[in-house]
Length: 343
Image (cartoon, rainbow, N blue to C red):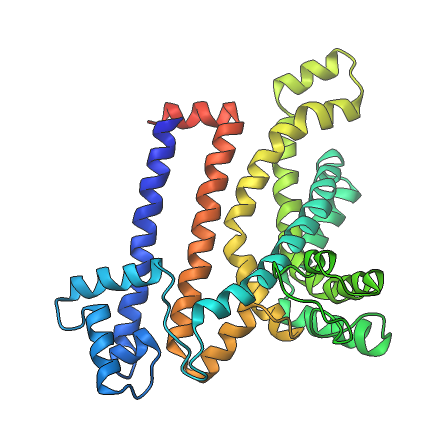
C-alpha cells in the first residue's frame, strides 16, 4: 500500500512539474514583456522592474527562471491583475469556493440520479426501461451545456418566472462571505430572515446546478449500467440467487458495493469536464465563480489571471484525482490486489 502511495506521489510531482513548465512556456510565448506577463505590473517603474527581474531571476538562465516561477506560485504569489492591479491570489480565494460549491452540488445530483437509474437499466436489461434510459442518457450527454442553460432561463426563468436567472443570492440579503459557500455563509451569519435567505439561495442554485449535472448524470447512468451488468452475471451473484436471497438484497448488498467503485473512479476523471462545463454555466447564469472570472480575463487578454487560473484549476483536478485514486485503492481489496499484482 505504501509503495503504491509513493508511486502516486511521484506521479503527482512529475505531473505538476509538467503543468508548471507548460504554463511557463506559454507566458514566454505570449506577446509583451515577460516581466509584465509574470507579475501583471503594467508599465513598471525602474525600481519595480528591477524587483521583478530579481524575483523571477530574469537575468539568469531559463532553468533558473522556471524554478523561480515555481517558487513564487507555490508561495501564493500569482502577481496582480492587468486591469485593476488587485492581487490575483486574493481574488481566487474569493471566487474559487463558488465554483467548487456549484461542482459539488452538481456531482451530488448526478450520483443521486445516475446510480439508481443505472441500476434500473441493468436490472431491466434489453427491455423498454433499459432502452429508454440509455436513449435518455445519450440525449443528456449530447446536449450542449450553453444551449440547455439558455433554454432553462427562457422557460423556467422568463416564461414561468419560477426561478431567478442570475447570481447567487438576492441583494436584499447582505451575507458576509466567510467560507464562500452560500448556504454555509447564511448559516454562520446573523442576518434576519435566515429561512427566506436559504430559500432564495436554493432557488438561485437550482437551474445552474441541474444544468451542470446533466452530463455527469448521463455518464453515471451508463457506467453504472455496465458495471452492474458485469456484477449481476458474476458467479457470486448467481450463488446468492441460488440460496434464495431477495432480489433487492442481491442488488444492494452484493452487486452494488462492487459496482460502485468503478463509477466513483470514473467520476474523478470527469472532474476536468465538469470544471469546463462550470465555466460556461457560470457565464450563462452570471454565477460569480472562477470560471466567469477566467473567461472575462480571456476577453481582456489578462495573461496573469489566465495563467493563474490554469494552474489552480488543473492543479485542483490533479490533486483530487490522486487522492481519490489512493482512497479507492485503500478501500477496495480487489483493486488493491490487482495493482499489487502489476508491480
